[in-house]
Length: 133
Image (cartoon, rainbow, N blue to C red; front, side):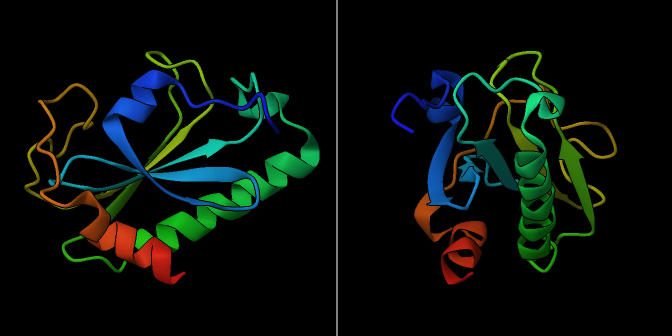
């Protein structure tokens, strides 16, 4: 689809990793967390419930696949999955590998503190896992 574009806020905070059947997969550039985002490639999509049923099913399949890649990464004890949309309306879903004692634990990571960028985001464990998958 030629009119699909990723919100500039997402673009500025992430590294694009792959295109899956429905979603573009991103790495959130914060080395304190194994943090992925799924952005369905549907122009104007804001809410999951507004997607076609087939797209809803595909998104759910991808929401199983991404955590399966994050869960075995070093230090991951808990997965957080969230779709807020308060700051960026474009439909996107966060999947974050958490651990007890991480900088935001036990609270949410959103707005906790400034990100600490990966020295080489393309070499991050999540980027490597997505490439292998």
